[in-house]
Image (cartoon, rainbow, N blue to C red; front, side, top):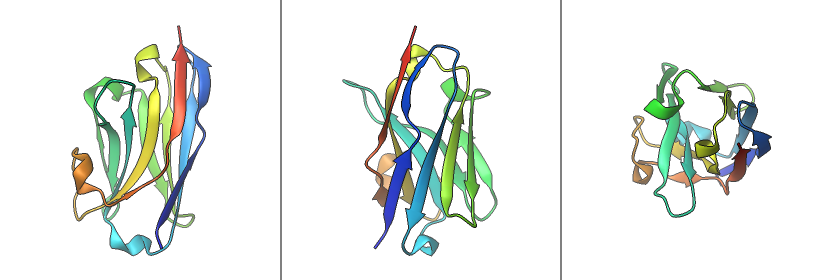
Amino acid sequence: QVQLVESGGGSVQAGGSLRLSCAASGPTYRWACMGWFRQAPGKERERVASIYIPSGSTYYTDSVKDRFTISRDNAKNTLYLQMNSLKPEDTAMYHCAAGGSFCSRESRAYDYWGQGTQVTVSS
């Protein structure tokens, strides 16, 4: 049974940093891509970043490039999202996702989801 458990969210002031973690358990060999999505109230879920596990290639939405870094510790089966220079518009529920044979920006391409961790950035 696949489980994705996020942690590391919280409340910070603009300009601050947070590191999100996503611990994966179960048959993790089933997916080639892991990613972070976020959803703010009244907005659609959007992909923030993803990583293609076989090659380590990473993908980011334009609004977080040069501020966020996605990484994965294969030995620990843990996905990370280092978030620096946080802005109020980064406020959202952040979800870890896994699935597929390639990295898509579409949420329907991911088979497994965590419950999410809240990130709140105040100005």
